[in-house]
Image (cartoon, rainbow, N blue to C red; front, top):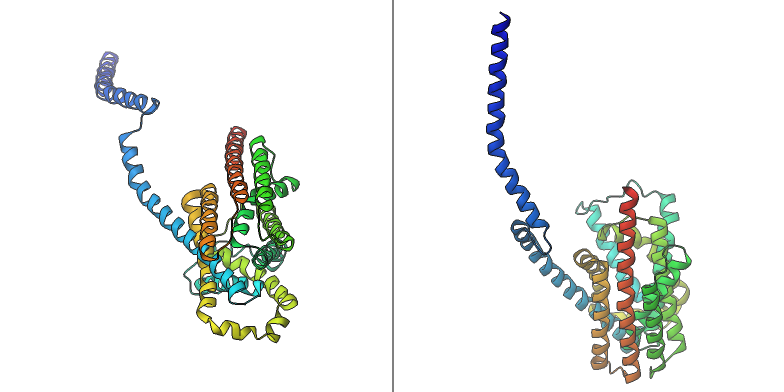
Length: 374
């Protein structure tokens, strides 16, 4: 009986070895070919055929979408600048806060309609309480209203071309505010870029023919308010990100309250006594277009950021500003001197250096974060 059991066990072991040997003969070549394929893929410059086809299949629509969104945003944003400048100066509607509130109002009304009809779902509805809104959103809305109000008032004193040149100084103001608030570390390239941008802005200011100190101060206050708004957003909300429609729905009322307060204090009395309503009725379609274009610019800006990223959006913004400068020279006859051209070109170079430094800082932070997790 014992010999029978031993022989049966031996036959089972022999059959097992034969089965394993047969499987290894089948699997080994496949494993070797797979390992060889991975080795080929790991070679510098080697791209897997399937991945390249898959990427090509997905990247082409993304490129087209990015181009469409970018062109639409640039055209809409430039058109809104020209239209606002015409209404404020040529049409005689000298109420900048009232004008910019039209775009904010239309943005909130449209987003409100989309949310209430179920077209858009609020992802952070449970987070938004009255106390949370007061502490987190109201300060951001207040600074946003200041940025819009001061920025629009600058058009009463400065040319469109010069305002676009001054916008090149936004990175310098933003970095100073972020560093002072402890939200950003200094990097030699970003600091160099800020110095170059500041120098270019000073040169462009020196070359301005129709210079106005009031206009310059208004523009600087607008940029400072925008930089503070971004700092408060980063400090108060952190990584919390709203979708565009949700962001307009949540942020809109806070900005509108402070815009309407500014209108009541600075513009409403003059608007009533000088029949401002009749000025609007003389060209109602222009004001309607200004309101709707305000919503389109807000919405398309998110689309461009989503398609191209934050850096791509900023680069597009600089290209758009250059186009607006040329357009203002043709449409409004804004004079641009050679000194201003040199100053603006210097600011663009500084902007490039600044953005390159920002990319390096973000890459370094990403590596540090990944090592920290490991």
